[in-house]
Image (cartoon, rainbow over all chains, first blue to last red):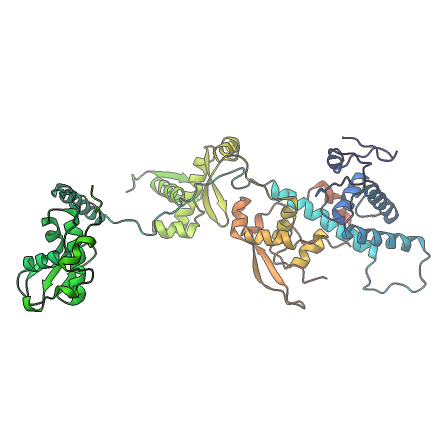
Length: 291
Length: 211
């Protein structure tokens, strides 16, 4: 778009987009933030190109005036000018002064670089970088112009071996067996099973000292869910007291019980949670949740 | 496993085993990531010369299809043909965030000048580039490659393999040249003015801390 700023000749500017934004340019609080120019070199390069200046023969006076005029316009628009831009302005003014003032009588030393040449070099290096960045951007970019087959997330480190199919079969078989087992009877009762009675019953099932049994099978043989739960608790208590030994070969393997205690050593008072019959009434009155 | 078919290949009197071409295709498809000729030869237990010929035949066969063989970062990779970018962009839910102009400049500075320091990059751009450099490091497009020997021993940066993959480049020697661009035609005559390093030698020695 075309812009006329303060009666000067119309300029085509990348800033035009920013100028065209909402708001009144005369309002001093109206501020613009833009990244169109990436530093003073970028602005200088834009001005040089706009004016069709040959980078090899940089007319310092002309570009200094052009640059300062641009900064003046920005300030008129209340654009805050970053320090970098002011440093460049100072450099340009310095270079312009070198051209206007008479040459000092002492000749420049051999290795001393003409500051104007230095600026031209920087500008050309910047122009080359910008061109390279553009050339690079024109390459077909991954996930923008071209795609590759995506890596699948969570792909297994080690593929499962065929042997695992048998584990699957085992799992399925075990599930069928459990399904076919008779479901526990549910009895609604105010009184839960008596812990002491459960201990005694378990000892009877195992037989005398040295007697063995399998916990799962024993629990399955009990009539109600509450019986099974309390008997399980009884098992833990008896193991703690050393009355029985509990062994399991592996995860989810059968739990084998071996009785150690003799009949005469059984003392129900040692069981935690056991209450003699006279107190049992209140303690056992808790409703059991049964389905 | 071979069906015994042999394809003609210039410069290889024995031709190329057609089944080897199929095997290379299968490996490149399953890999997704670029595979080097040597790696392909190891996997197929074949001579690298045979494999390279097979890759070239495959590239030729696929050249006009939707999935082409590209040389990327020293390896070979199956990639979609650029002309289908529209539908593929839609498939992937829109255009991804592009690199900013500043990021492209910093990346270009490092790509063509590597190894180089942050000061080198900033001298070229004339602006602070620390934040942009950090984000490029986080994206894995540049990496730290030791320290310069100039005072202060600043960190040196290089581009990564991901950079080559992102810009579809076989290697650093294939960076696009800008010698013929308009901006530089006027400067080309000035022999006394040292420009940046020649495009023909992007791996050439970086600046030794001119600041």
